Length: 496
Image (cartoon, rainbow, N blue to C red; front, side, top):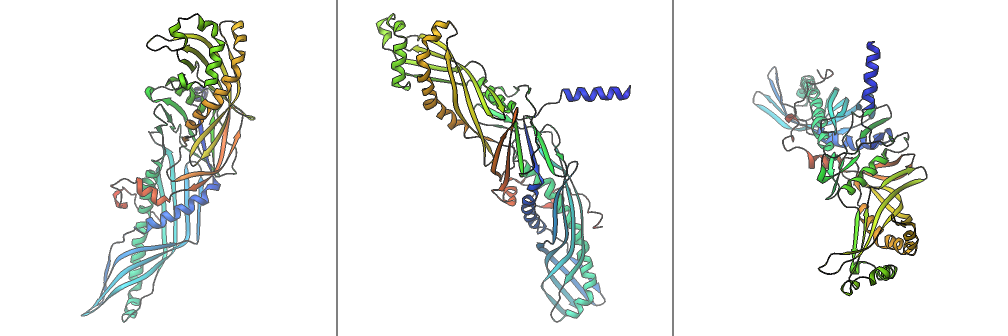
């Protein structure tokens, strides 16, 4: 019975789980690019290591090693890979760190000092970034595991006291190696928990698209990591800004990601686009009004001729009034995605009226327009852009079949008006695009769009438009310039 109850609870939880409108997959093919940029950032972070002064005495010799700085990281072997369930792991083997420090030696009244270069060899670093969903719906680094060790130190002493330094080198190098081991993991912990999270803070969660509509990229659950992919599921829903709490139920087909040839794949369901169109509909944006000289001259003449009988029955003061043509969506448009392409179905009312100055407008006719638009999607930089093309167009009267027959001569002129006058305005607006939930400084390149039944996928490669260091420095919190500002864990067991 307990097993049956648990099964029922699991089924109920699954039934009420929110379906994603957008999914993103980062494949292992992206890791080499990410690793190269990450290693440059790591080298710069290791250069911030500050090692305490090393002082000691052997017999009558007093020595002091100070101002120890890491100058470079030289890599022999490095690997970045996914590790189930939620980790991204970086492993560096047999690397070396270049060091520079100040030496001081006192023997009775004899003093020697100066700067010297050294190297830490056999450097091993194994760090794992655990990825999870934070309360705001953004992916964050929730923990950093670290092991680091330096197998040996090499210092080439010279000068008058070279033999003395060589005698003391065992004490100096072992002390420096111990202190260096103690410093690597805290730097990596700070880099992951503070600096990388400041980069992830640039990923949009709930932001405005324009003055009317916003978009919600709330991460629905923790990222899922396999040996070859990192998968993320987002709400992917638009909303009118005037109704910030409004949401539309997602009843579309859940998008699926199967491909792995590109660095990243983004999938959008029909719900993603339907919620956008419904949001603009609720915001009152899906309408167009042309009055007077805004109506093309040829169309104005045709409309007046078509409704000549109704116009001549009006008073002389109204006959020559400006003409008004209004198109207004009566229901939210709907998107249909098939392997053959993406279409948008629009049903709108078309109202024709005369607008006499300082008098109520005089309606001439109201008809229904049904249009079907083909939609082409593209990723540019990190914006999803859409271009619409009018394919099918029909107008009819909802009053009588006879009036529908009388509207046939208006079909071609109204379609031409939409193609020449309306569609360019719509495309100019929607071509601005909607940002994809990607960190600042990273763009998509070489995208390929594939349509499926109920959803589409876009595969692309990644490009660092800005260096990781540049983006992090721009967005890092003001009080975290020093790695010591974060609460770092104890040094790794390997270091101890």
